[in-house]
Structure formats: structure tokens, C-alpha cells
Amino acid sequence: MRAILSVEDKQLLNRIQQDFPVHTAPYAVIGTELGMTEQEVLERVARLKQEGYIRRIGPCFNSHELGYTSTLVALSIPEETIVEAAAIINRYTGVTHNYIRSGTYNMWFTFIASSQAQLEQDLADIRNQIGMTAMLVLPATHMFKVNVNLHITEDRA
Amino acid sequence: MIDALDKMIIAALQADFPVSRHPYRELAARIGITEEEMLRRIQQYQEAGYIRKIGAVLRHREVGFLANVLCVWQVPEVQIEEVGRIFAAHPAVSHCYARPAFPEWPHNMYTMIHGISQSQCEMYIQELMGLSGLSEYILLYSIRELKKSSMRYFIETELVD
Image (cartoon, rainbow over all chains, first blue to last red; front, top):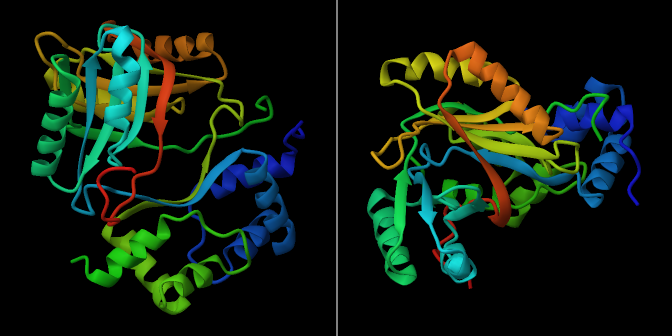
């Protein structure tokens, strides 16, 4: 069983989701802000990772600024072929998220590729491999918010 | 321009940061550069917009956000900018994008909404309806997660073995 998150854990989780210091001793900087020692911050972060609250620590890149192109793709896949289609699609490293969702278009995946030509080639390959199916290619035309920060308050966890 | 060293650094930064006193020093050592060079380049990437943010990615469910729903809306083209700003300002919306509509799929605005329960998510959607004046939407609940991973930039493999 994992312990319930303490007030200090929640403070740390809220602080560490963004602006991780670009500094020789980032955990010491965070500790100073939160009134904890560097050692205490390191111990808490290690435990929060071990307990599964933290998936990873690192940068989130802007794929477009790095020269990559991305899109959301929706497919209408018969229930009995979902597993097979997912195996084909998920083999691509550019497929980062893939979900079965309620509705006519039931498989939704995100695809990042090194160029538009590569993206089109890969999607054509996928279409060939999984056979005839309705596919919507939905690249973002405006991005209004990309924010994976979760504010953890007293009533959570 | 992104040079060969940048690609090496960006590839190295995709590893999970070490939980140790000097994580940047350790990452720099892995690719044979100094900590100073690593810190300087990261600052450049932030200024250039290559890096959106640096921080911890949490597991939503573990920290109490048990429910999420993708809500897709039909927004008149002239209102896209205004509605996008309204939706983006709502704290329960983590992602908000406009995407093309098709005759068979008229929805053109995508919002990912997080809450402690399905009913809380639906309450937030009522708020978004009130704020935007929109009423045409559908809810796409996730039934099964088939893949969730981080993109690996400048790592020369297209397929996972």
C-alpha cells in the first residue's frame, strides 16, 4: 500500500511539474523555495517516483520547433480487429498515444513524424496493412492550450 | 539551426532525469560534454521554443484525477479564436486544439478535460457551454489505453522492435 500524500508531497508535486531549474543543483533550488533541504527533496522525489505518482522528469519538446510534424488520427475499426490493428499501429515510435474511445470513430492515435512526406507515407502504409477502414487525419490548425500541469489540492489523493 | 551536438543532447535529455544532486552533470557525462555546455544549450532550447517545459510528468489517476474525457465541439469558423481562448482559460482543460472538420465529422474543436469523476467532467462541460454559448458537442470517453509513450526525437528508429 502506498502512503497518502502529505501536504509537503502535494507542494512538491505542484512545484516540480514545471520550471524545473536549469541549474547545477536543481533539487536544492526547489528545496530553498519550499523550505526543505536538498536531501529531503531528493528523498521525496525518489519515493514519489517509486510509488508511481511521477512518471518521468525531463523536458517536453515542441515537435514542430524541432522540425517534426504531427497529427491526430481517428479510425473506425471493427471490434474484432482492434487488437490486430493496434499491434500494427503501435509499432511506429511516432505513435505516442493510442486509445479506444466511445463512438463511430473508435481508435484515436497521435502520430509524430520527421516530415510531412514521412507522415503521409507512414499513414498510407498503415492503411494498407490494416485494410479498408474509415480514417480521419486531423492535424491541429490552432493550438490554444498544451498544459499537462495538474494542480493537486487538499481534496485529491 | 539544430546541429549534430544538439541532436545528441536532445536525444540524451529524453532519458528520465536522475534523481541525484547534479542531474545535468550526469546527463552531460553520458554524452561527453561539460555540465556548463549542457546548461547553456538547454537555456538556448528554451529561448528557441524547442523545449515547451521541463518538469515532472505525473500519472493522472495516481494523483486523484480519476476521470478524463475528450470533448469535441462544433464551432462556427468565425468563432474559433474566441472559443479557443475561452476554453483554454478553464483550469480543467489540459489541451485545447482546433482541427479540420469533414462532412462526415463536423467537429472542429478538441478539449481534454480532467476531473475527479465522470460527473465532475460533465459539470465542467456545462460550464464551458455556458461560457461559450455552444451546445453542439460529443463526449469521447477512453475505453482502453492501447499505448502511451514519449516521443523519441533524433533517435534513428521508426519502428519499435
